[in-house]
Image 1 (spheres, rainbow, N blue to C red):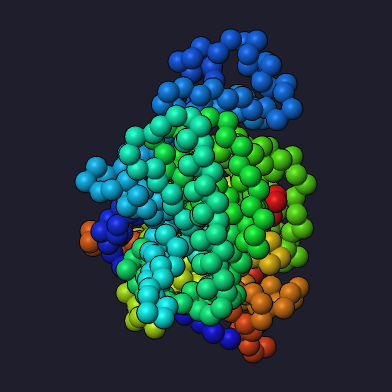
Image 2: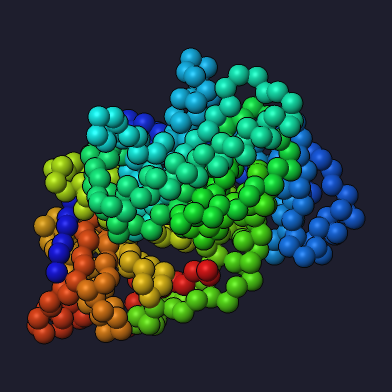
Length: 489
Protein backbone atom coordinates (compact mmCIF):
# COMPACT_ATOMS: atom_id res chain seq x y z
CA UNK A 1 0.00 0.00 0.00
CA UNK A 2 1.15 3.54 -0.72
CA UNK A 3 -0.50 6.66 0.67
CA UNK A 4 0.08 10.36 0.03
CA UNK A 5 -1.52 13.13 2.10
CA UNK A 6 -1.36 16.91 1.82
CA UNK A 7 -3.15 20.06 2.93
CA UNK A 8 -4.42 22.60 0.39
CA UNK A 9 -3.00 26.15 0.43
CA UNK A 10 -4.92 29.38 0.43
CA UNK A 11 -7.49 29.79 -2.32
CA UNK A 12 -5.96 33.05 -3.51
CA UNK A 13 -2.85 31.15 -4.64
CA UNK A 14 -4.82 29.81 -7.59
CA UNK A 15 -5.29 33.37 -8.86
CA UNK A 16 -1.51 33.71 -9.15
CA UNK A 17 -1.09 30.74 -11.52
CA UNK A 18 -0.57 31.69 -15.19
CA UNK A 19 -3.49 30.49 -17.28
CA UNK A 20 -5.63 29.17 -14.45
CA UNK A 21 -6.38 32.65 -13.14
CA UNK A 22 -8.32 33.33 -16.31
CA UNK A 23 -10.65 30.38 -15.94
CA UNK A 24 -11.53 31.35 -12.38
CA UNK A 25 -12.37 34.92 -13.35
CA UNK A 26 -14.17 33.60 -16.42
CA UNK A 27 -16.88 32.29 -14.13
CA UNK A 28 -18.29 35.81 -14.19
CA UNK A 29 -19.13 35.48 -17.89
CA UNK A 30 -21.63 32.69 -18.31
CA UNK A 31 -20.80 30.03 -20.92
CA UNK A 32 -24.50 30.17 -21.76
CA UNK A 33 -23.59 33.18 -23.93
CA UNK A 34 -22.55 30.63 -26.55
CA UNK A 35 -25.27 28.06 -25.80
CA UNK A 36 -28.84 29.33 -25.99
CA UNK A 37 -32.25 27.91 -26.85
CA UNK A 38 -32.83 28.39 -30.55
CA UNK A 39 -36.15 30.12 -29.84
CA UNK A 40 -34.19 32.94 -28.15
CA UNK A 41 -31.68 33.36 -30.97
CA UNK A 42 -31.29 36.73 -32.67
CA UNK A 43 -31.29 34.80 -35.95
CA UNK A 44 -35.03 34.18 -35.58
CA UNK A 45 -35.04 30.60 -36.82
CA UNK A 46 -38.37 29.64 -38.30
CA UNK A 47 -40.47 26.82 -36.89
CA UNK A 48 -39.97 24.92 -40.15
CA UNK A 49 -36.17 25.22 -39.87
CA UNK A 50 -36.19 23.98 -36.29
CA UNK A 51 -38.49 21.08 -37.13
CA UNK A 52 -36.32 20.03 -40.08
CA UNK A 53 -33.21 20.11 -37.89
CA UNK A 54 -34.83 18.09 -35.12
CA UNK A 55 -35.84 15.40 -37.62
CA UNK A 56 -32.44 15.14 -39.32
CA UNK A 57 -30.21 12.09 -38.88
CA UNK A 58 -27.79 13.64 -36.39
CA UNK A 59 -29.68 16.80 -35.46
CA UNK A 60 -26.90 19.17 -36.49
CA UNK A 61 -26.85 22.23 -38.74
CA UNK A 62 -24.09 24.71 -39.62
CA UNK A 63 -23.99 28.40 -40.50
CA UNK A 64 -20.60 30.12 -41.00
CA UNK A 65 -20.32 33.91 -40.93
CA UNK A 66 -17.32 36.19 -41.26
CA UNK A 67 -16.38 35.98 -37.59
CA UNK A 68 -18.22 32.98 -36.13
CA UNK A 69 -19.34 29.43 -36.77
CA UNK A 70 -22.87 28.72 -35.54
CA UNK A 71 -24.09 25.17 -34.99
CA UNK A 72 -27.71 24.22 -34.47
CA UNK A 73 -27.84 21.22 -32.12
CA UNK A 74 -30.91 19.10 -31.49
CA UNK A 75 -31.04 17.65 -27.95
CA UNK A 76 -33.71 15.86 -25.88
CA UNK A 77 -34.29 19.24 -24.21
CA UNK A 78 -34.90 21.04 -27.51
CA UNK A 79 -32.88 22.74 -30.21
CA UNK A 80 -29.97 24.93 -29.12
CA UNK A 81 -27.70 27.37 -30.88
CA UNK A 82 -23.98 26.87 -30.24
CA UNK A 83 -21.73 29.73 -31.28
CA UNK A 84 -18.10 28.80 -32.00
CA UNK A 85 -16.12 32.07 -32.08
CA UNK A 86 -12.87 32.55 -33.93
CA UNK A 87 -9.70 31.83 -32.00
CA UNK A 88 -8.66 34.36 -29.38
CA UNK A 89 -6.52 37.26 -30.66
CA UNK A 90 -2.77 36.75 -30.72
CA UNK A 91 -0.29 38.96 -28.91
CA UNK A 92 0.71 41.75 -31.28
CA UNK A 93 4.25 42.23 -29.97
CA UNK A 94 5.34 38.65 -30.85
CA UNK A 95 5.89 36.97 -34.20
CA UNK A 96 2.78 35.09 -35.26
CA UNK A 97 4.41 31.69 -34.71
CA UNK A 98 5.60 32.55 -31.21
CA UNK A 99 2.27 34.15 -30.32
CA UNK A 100 0.39 31.10 -31.60
CA UNK A 101 2.47 28.77 -29.43
CA UNK A 102 1.73 30.90 -26.38
CA UNK A 103 -1.98 31.04 -27.22
CA UNK A 104 -2.19 27.26 -27.61
CA UNK A 105 -0.51 26.70 -24.24
CA UNK A 106 -2.60 29.44 -22.63
CA UNK A 107 -5.85 27.83 -23.78
CA UNK A 108 -4.80 24.43 -22.44
CA UNK A 109 -3.79 25.93 -19.08
CA UNK A 110 -6.96 28.04 -18.85
CA UNK A 111 -9.64 25.47 -19.58
CA UNK A 112 -7.64 22.47 -18.40
CA UNK A 113 -5.09 22.24 -15.60
CA UNK A 114 -1.66 23.87 -16.13
CA UNK A 115 -0.11 20.83 -14.43
CA UNK A 116 -0.70 18.73 -17.56
CA UNK A 117 0.67 21.30 -20.02
CA UNK A 118 4.37 20.73 -20.76
CA UNK A 119 6.39 23.56 -22.25
CA UNK A 120 8.70 22.76 -25.19
CA UNK A 121 12.11 21.58 -24.05
CA UNK A 122 15.45 21.50 -25.83
CA UNK A 123 18.06 18.77 -25.50
CA UNK A 124 21.45 18.22 -27.08
CA UNK A 125 21.82 15.77 -29.97
CA UNK A 126 25.43 15.40 -31.02
CA UNK A 127 26.74 18.89 -31.74
CA UNK A 128 23.28 20.33 -32.19
CA UNK A 129 20.09 20.74 -30.19
CA UNK A 130 16.64 19.28 -30.65
CA UNK A 131 13.33 20.73 -29.48
CA UNK A 132 10.81 18.25 -28.13
CA UNK A 133 7.69 19.43 -30.00
CA UNK A 134 5.86 22.72 -29.43
CA UNK A 135 4.54 21.33 -26.18
CA UNK A 136 2.81 18.28 -24.74
CA UNK A 137 -0.38 17.47 -22.88
CA UNK A 138 0.15 14.51 -20.55
CA UNK A 139 -2.51 13.26 -18.18
CA UNK A 140 -2.14 9.79 -16.68
CA UNK A 141 -1.09 7.30 -19.35
CA UNK A 142 -2.31 9.34 -22.33
CA UNK A 143 -0.43 12.14 -24.06
CA UNK A 144 -0.73 14.58 -26.95
CA UNK A 145 2.25 15.90 -28.92
CA UNK A 146 1.45 19.39 -30.18
CA UNK A 147 2.98 20.93 -33.30
CA UNK A 148 1.94 24.43 -34.39
CA UNK A 149 2.20 25.85 -37.90
CA UNK A 150 1.57 29.58 -38.24
CA UNK A 151 1.18 31.53 -41.48
CA UNK A 152 3.45 34.57 -41.43
CA UNK A 153 2.74 37.53 -43.71
CA UNK A 154 -0.33 38.19 -45.82
CA UNK A 155 -2.23 35.29 -47.44
CA UNK A 156 -1.95 34.88 -51.21
CA UNK A 157 -4.31 33.10 -53.60
CA UNK A 158 -6.55 30.28 -52.45
CA UNK A 159 -4.42 27.79 -54.39
CA UNK A 160 -1.17 28.93 -52.76
CA UNK A 161 -2.71 28.95 -49.29
CA UNK A 162 -4.16 25.50 -49.83
CA UNK A 163 -0.73 24.23 -50.83
CA UNK A 164 0.88 25.93 -47.82
CA UNK A 165 -1.58 24.42 -45.34
CA UNK A 166 -1.27 20.89 -46.72
CA UNK A 167 2.55 21.07 -46.74
CA UNK A 168 2.59 22.34 -43.15
CA UNK A 169 0.29 19.58 -41.93
CA UNK A 170 2.54 17.00 -43.58
CA UNK A 171 5.66 18.58 -42.03
CA UNK A 172 3.98 18.68 -38.63
CA UNK A 173 3.15 14.98 -38.92
CA UNK A 174 6.80 14.13 -39.56
CA UNK A 175 7.92 16.26 -36.62
CA UNK A 176 5.36 14.57 -34.37
CA UNK A 177 6.60 11.13 -35.45
CA UNK A 178 10.17 12.14 -34.54
CA UNK A 179 9.10 13.49 -31.16
CA UNK A 180 7.15 10.33 -30.33
CA UNK A 181 10.12 8.15 -31.28
CA UNK A 182 12.22 10.16 -28.84
CA UNK A 183 9.59 9.94 -26.09
CA UNK A 184 9.15 6.20 -26.55
CA UNK A 185 12.89 5.64 -26.23
CA UNK A 186 13.21 6.82 -22.63
CA UNK A 187 11.69 9.14 -20.05
CA UNK A 188 12.32 12.87 -20.18
CA UNK A 189 11.99 15.70 -17.67
CA UNK A 190 9.90 18.71 -18.72
CA UNK A 191 8.54 21.83 -17.04
CA UNK A 192 4.77 22.07 -16.67
CA UNK A 193 2.49 25.08 -16.47
CA UNK A 194 3.10 25.44 -12.73
CA UNK A 195 6.82 25.77 -13.34
CA UNK A 196 7.50 22.33 -11.83
CA UNK A 197 10.02 19.96 -13.40
CA UNK A 198 8.23 16.61 -13.77
CA UNK A 199 9.21 13.29 -15.26
CA UNK A 200 7.39 12.11 -18.38
CA UNK A 201 7.55 8.32 -18.65
CA UNK A 202 7.32 8.41 -22.42
CA UNK A 203 7.50 4.64 -23.08
CA UNK A 204 4.48 4.09 -20.79
CA UNK A 205 2.32 6.80 -22.41
CA UNK A 206 -0.03 6.26 -25.35
CA UNK A 207 0.61 9.15 -27.77
CA UNK A 208 -1.35 10.97 -30.44
CA UNK A 209 -0.27 14.08 -32.32
CA UNK A 210 -2.11 17.32 -33.01
CA UNK A 211 -1.05 19.65 -35.83
CA UNK A 212 -2.56 23.06 -35.05
CA UNK A 213 -2.86 25.47 -37.97
CA UNK A 214 -2.77 29.20 -37.27
CA UNK A 215 -3.96 31.02 -40.38
CA UNK A 216 -5.69 34.41 -40.70
CA UNK A 217 -7.96 33.15 -43.50
CA UNK A 218 -7.78 29.35 -43.87
CA UNK A 219 -9.01 27.83 -47.13
CA UNK A 220 -12.61 26.65 -46.93
CA UNK A 221 -13.65 23.00 -47.40
CA UNK A 222 -10.02 21.86 -47.41
CA UNK A 223 -9.90 18.08 -47.35
CA UNK A 224 -7.21 16.74 -45.00
CA UNK A 225 -5.36 13.65 -46.14
CA UNK A 226 -5.10 10.77 -43.68
CA UNK A 227 -1.80 10.47 -41.86
CA UNK A 228 -0.21 7.04 -42.38
CA UNK A 229 2.53 7.10 -39.76
CA UNK A 230 2.72 5.02 -36.62
CA UNK A 231 1.32 7.82 -34.47
CA UNK A 232 -2.18 9.16 -35.19
CA UNK A 233 -2.08 12.86 -36.14
CA UNK A 234 -5.11 15.16 -36.00
CA UNK A 235 -5.12 18.49 -37.87
CA UNK A 236 -7.02 21.31 -36.14
CA UNK A 237 -7.49 25.01 -36.59
CA UNK A 238 -6.55 26.91 -33.45
CA UNK A 239 -10.23 27.83 -33.18
CA UNK A 240 -11.11 24.15 -32.91
CA UNK A 241 -8.42 23.57 -30.27
CA UNK A 242 -9.96 26.32 -28.14
CA UNK A 243 -13.46 24.99 -28.81
CA UNK A 244 -12.61 21.53 -27.45
CA UNK A 245 -10.92 22.92 -24.33
CA UNK A 246 -13.71 25.40 -23.62
CA UNK A 247 -16.41 22.81 -24.34
CA UNK A 248 -15.02 20.20 -21.93
CA UNK A 249 -12.94 22.22 -19.41
CA UNK A 250 -10.98 19.12 -18.52
CA UNK A 251 -7.56 18.10 -19.81
CA UNK A 252 -8.39 14.44 -19.24
CA UNK A 253 -11.58 14.76 -21.28
CA UNK A 254 -9.89 16.62 -24.16
CA UNK A 255 -6.97 14.20 -24.34
CA UNK A 256 -9.39 11.27 -24.21
CA UNK A 257 -11.42 12.81 -27.04
CA UNK A 258 -8.35 13.25 -29.23
CA UNK A 259 -7.32 9.64 -28.62
CA UNK A 260 -10.84 8.51 -29.41
CA UNK A 261 -10.91 10.39 -32.73
CA UNK A 262 -7.47 9.27 -33.87
CA UNK A 263 -7.72 10.98 -37.29
CA UNK A 264 -8.50 14.44 -38.60
CA UNK A 265 -12.01 15.53 -39.41
CA UNK A 266 -12.59 15.11 -43.16
CA UNK A 267 -12.44 18.90 -43.68
CA UNK A 268 -10.04 21.25 -41.88
CA UNK A 269 -12.11 23.27 -39.42
CA UNK A 270 -14.77 20.56 -39.15
CA UNK A 271 -13.87 19.43 -35.63
CA UNK A 272 -16.91 21.06 -33.91
CA UNK A 273 -19.25 19.15 -36.19
CA UNK A 274 -17.39 15.90 -35.60
CA UNK A 275 -17.56 16.55 -31.85
CA UNK A 276 -21.34 16.88 -31.98
CA UNK A 277 -21.66 13.79 -34.14
CA UNK A 278 -19.77 11.82 -31.47
CA UNK A 279 -21.77 13.52 -28.71
CA UNK A 280 -25.00 12.43 -30.42
CA UNK A 281 -23.65 8.87 -30.61
CA UNK A 282 -22.77 9.02 -26.91
CA UNK A 283 -26.28 10.13 -26.03
CA UNK A 284 -27.68 7.07 -27.82
CA UNK A 285 -25.04 4.60 -26.57
CA UNK A 286 -25.82 1.79 -24.18
CA UNK A 287 -24.02 2.49 -20.87
CA UNK A 288 -20.86 0.51 -20.28
CA UNK A 289 -20.54 -2.03 -17.47
CA UNK A 290 -20.83 -0.57 -13.99
CA UNK A 291 -18.19 -1.20 -11.37
CA UNK A 292 -19.52 -4.14 -9.31
CA UNK A 293 -18.87 -2.23 -6.09
CA UNK A 294 -21.51 0.40 -6.93
CA UNK A 295 -24.38 -1.49 -5.33
CA UNK A 296 -22.91 -1.50 -1.85
CA UNK A 297 -25.01 0.46 0.61
CA UNK A 298 -27.59 1.39 -2.01
CA UNK A 299 -25.29 3.20 -4.48
CA UNK A 300 -27.15 4.72 -7.43
CA UNK A 301 -25.98 3.89 -10.97
CA UNK A 302 -26.20 6.94 -13.21
CA UNK A 303 -25.09 7.18 -16.83
CA UNK A 304 -23.96 10.36 -18.60
CA UNK A 305 -22.31 10.83 -22.02
CA UNK A 306 -18.57 11.33 -21.98
CA UNK A 307 -19.10 14.13 -24.53
CA UNK A 308 -21.82 16.52 -23.36
CA UNK A 309 -23.77 18.50 -25.95
CA UNK A 310 -23.88 21.59 -23.77
CA UNK A 311 -20.62 23.36 -22.86
CA UNK A 312 -19.27 22.33 -19.47
CA UNK A 313 -20.67 24.62 -16.82
CA UNK A 314 -23.61 25.92 -18.86
CA UNK A 315 -26.03 24.18 -16.49
CA UNK A 316 -24.35 25.47 -13.30
CA UNK A 317 -21.16 27.44 -13.78
CA UNK A 318 -20.83 28.06 -10.04
CA UNK A 319 -20.72 24.30 -9.43
CA UNK A 320 -18.11 23.73 -12.17
CA UNK A 321 -15.99 26.60 -10.86
CA UNK A 322 -16.17 25.03 -7.38
CA UNK A 323 -14.68 21.81 -8.77
CA UNK A 324 -11.92 23.77 -10.51
CA UNK A 325 -11.05 25.68 -7.32
CA UNK A 326 -10.88 22.40 -5.41
CA UNK A 327 -8.47 21.05 -8.05
CA UNK A 328 -6.43 24.26 -7.78
CA UNK A 329 -6.18 23.76 -4.01
CA UNK A 330 -4.74 20.30 -4.52
CA UNK A 331 -2.50 21.38 -7.41
CA UNK A 332 -0.94 24.33 -5.57
CA UNK A 333 -0.45 22.68 -2.19
CA UNK A 334 3.17 23.02 -1.04
CA UNK A 335 5.17 19.84 -1.61
CA UNK A 336 8.80 18.90 -1.89
CA UNK A 337 10.01 18.61 -5.51
CA UNK A 338 10.40 14.84 -5.17
CA UNK A 339 6.62 14.62 -4.55
CA UNK A 340 5.54 16.55 -7.65
CA UNK A 341 5.35 13.42 -9.82
CA UNK A 342 3.05 11.76 -7.27
CA UNK A 343 0.81 14.83 -7.31
CA UNK A 344 0.64 14.65 -11.12
CA UNK A 345 -0.78 11.13 -10.79
CA UNK A 346 -3.30 12.21 -8.16
CA UNK A 347 -4.45 15.18 -10.24
CA UNK A 348 -4.86 12.90 -13.26
CA UNK A 349 -7.17 10.71 -11.18
CA UNK A 350 -9.23 13.69 -9.99
CA UNK A 351 -9.45 15.15 -13.49
CA UNK A 352 -10.71 11.80 -14.78
CA UNK A 353 -14.12 12.53 -13.24
CA UNK A 354 -16.31 12.75 -16.38
CA UNK A 355 -17.58 16.22 -17.25
CA UNK A 356 -21.18 15.11 -16.87
CA UNK A 357 -20.70 14.43 -13.15
CA UNK A 358 -19.05 17.73 -12.24
CA UNK A 359 -22.23 19.72 -11.78
CA UNK A 360 -23.43 17.14 -9.26
CA UNK A 361 -20.10 17.16 -7.44
CA UNK A 362 -19.72 20.94 -7.38
CA UNK A 363 -23.28 21.48 -6.17
CA UNK A 364 -22.81 18.78 -3.52
CA UNK A 365 -19.68 20.53 -2.21
CA UNK A 366 -21.27 23.99 -2.22
CA UNK A 367 -24.46 22.80 -0.51
CA UNK A 368 -22.52 20.73 2.03
CA UNK A 369 -20.26 23.64 2.96
CA UNK A 370 -23.33 25.84 3.42
CA UNK A 371 -25.17 23.19 5.44
CA UNK A 372 -22.56 21.95 7.91
CA UNK A 373 -23.07 23.98 11.09
CA UNK A 374 -20.60 25.34 13.57
CA UNK A 375 -19.86 22.19 15.58
CA UNK A 376 -21.31 22.01 19.05
CA UNK A 377 -19.25 20.44 21.78
CA UNK A 378 -18.71 16.82 20.89
CA UNK A 379 -20.72 17.08 17.64
CA UNK A 380 -19.19 16.59 14.20
CA UNK A 381 -21.25 16.69 10.99
CA UNK A 382 -20.17 14.88 7.80
CA UNK A 383 -21.35 14.83 4.19
CA UNK A 384 -19.71 12.20 1.93
CA UNK A 385 -20.00 11.08 -1.67
CA UNK A 386 -18.13 8.51 -3.76
CA UNK A 387 -17.85 8.32 -7.56
CA UNK A 388 -16.87 5.12 -9.37
CA UNK A 389 -16.89 5.86 -13.10
CA UNK A 390 -16.03 2.37 -14.32
CA UNK A 391 -14.29 -0.87 -13.40
CA UNK A 392 -10.82 0.39 -14.39
CA UNK A 393 -11.18 4.00 -13.29
CA UNK A 394 -9.88 5.53 -10.08
CA UNK A 395 -12.43 5.72 -7.26
CA UNK A 396 -12.96 9.29 -6.12
CA UNK A 397 -14.30 10.18 -2.68
CA UNK A 398 -15.32 13.66 -1.54
CA UNK A 399 -16.26 14.70 1.97
CA UNK A 400 -17.21 17.86 3.82
CA UNK A 401 -16.79 17.93 7.59
CA UNK A 402 -17.71 20.62 10.08
CA UNK A 403 -14.28 20.61 11.76
CA UNK A 404 -10.67 19.83 10.95
CA UNK A 405 -8.96 18.05 13.81
CA UNK A 406 -6.60 15.14 14.21
CA UNK A 407 -9.67 13.00 14.91
CA UNK A 408 -11.53 14.04 11.73
CA UNK A 409 -8.38 13.63 9.61
CA UNK A 410 -8.01 10.08 10.95
CA UNK A 411 -11.70 9.40 10.30
CA UNK A 412 -11.43 10.67 6.72
CA UNK A 413 -8.40 8.45 6.09
CA UNK A 414 -10.26 5.47 7.57
CA UNK A 415 -13.30 6.14 5.34
CA UNK A 416 -11.14 6.25 2.22
CA UNK A 417 -9.26 3.09 3.19
CA UNK A 418 -12.55 1.27 3.77
CA UNK A 419 -13.98 2.33 0.42
CA UNK A 420 -10.76 1.26 -1.29
CA UNK A 421 -10.80 -2.10 0.51
CA UNK A 422 -14.40 -2.69 -0.61
CA UNK A 423 -13.41 -2.36 -4.27
CA UNK A 424 -10.98 -5.22 -3.68
CA UNK A 425 -13.95 -7.52 -3.19
CA UNK A 426 -14.55 -7.27 -6.96
CA UNK A 427 -11.21 -6.27 -8.48
CA UNK A 428 -7.43 -6.50 -8.15
CA UNK A 429 -6.47 -3.57 -5.94
CA UNK A 430 -2.89 -3.67 -7.23
CA UNK A 431 -4.19 -1.96 -10.37
CA UNK A 432 -6.53 0.52 -8.70
CA UNK A 433 -6.27 3.85 -6.89
CA UNK A 434 -8.67 5.70 -4.63
CA UNK A 435 -8.34 9.45 -4.11
CA UNK A 436 -10.20 11.41 -1.47
CA UNK A 437 -10.64 15.16 -0.93
CA UNK A 438 -11.91 16.61 2.33
CA UNK A 439 -13.19 20.19 2.70
CA UNK A 440 -13.60 21.73 6.15
CA UNK A 441 -15.03 25.25 6.59
CA UNK A 442 -13.09 27.94 8.43
CA UNK A 443 -14.59 30.67 10.58
CA UNK A 444 -11.57 32.97 10.91
CA UNK A 445 -12.25 34.93 7.72
CA UNK A 446 -8.80 34.08 6.35
CA UNK A 447 -10.28 31.79 3.73
CA UNK A 448 -13.52 29.82 3.39
CA UNK A 449 -12.27 26.27 3.79
CA UNK A 450 -9.26 23.99 4.18
CA UNK A 451 -8.57 21.24 1.65
CA UNK A 452 -7.10 17.89 2.64
CA UNK A 453 -6.26 15.19 0.10
CA UNK A 454 -5.33 11.54 0.49
CA UNK A 455 -4.61 8.86 -2.11
CA UNK A 456 -4.30 5.10 -1.72
CA UNK A 457 -3.20 2.41 -4.15
CA UNK A 458 -2.69 -1.25 -3.52
CA UNK A 459 -4.03 -3.28 -0.61
CA UNK A 460 -4.79 -1.11 2.47
CA UNK A 461 -4.13 -4.22 4.58
CA UNK A 462 -6.94 -3.64 7.05
CA UNK A 463 -6.97 -5.94 10.04
CA UNK A 464 -10.19 -7.71 10.91
CA UNK A 465 -10.65 -5.40 13.87
CA UNK A 466 -10.12 -2.28 11.74
CA UNK A 467 -12.52 -3.53 9.08
CA UNK A 468 -15.31 -4.18 11.60
CA UNK A 469 -14.76 -0.83 13.27
CA UNK A 470 -14.82 1.08 9.99
CA UNK A 471 -17.91 -0.76 8.76
CA UNK A 472 -19.75 -0.01 11.99
CA UNK A 473 -18.78 3.63 11.68
CA UNK A 474 -19.42 4.29 7.99
CA UNK A 475 -21.71 1.56 6.61
CA UNK A 476 -24.95 2.58 8.24
CA UNK A 477 -28.22 1.32 6.71
CA UNK A 478 -29.44 3.37 3.73
CA UNK A 479 -26.22 5.36 3.71
CA UNK A 480 -26.60 7.92 0.89
CA UNK A 481 -22.90 8.71 0.83
CA UNK A 482 -22.05 6.63 -2.23
CA UNK A 483 -22.94 7.64 -5.74
CA UNK A 484 -21.52 5.24 -8.30
CA UNK A 485 -21.78 6.13 -11.95
CA UNK A 486 -21.00 4.68 -15.35
CA UNK A 487 -20.23 6.99 -18.31
CA UNK A 488 -21.42 6.13 -21.78
CA UNK A 489 -18.44 5.60 -24.12
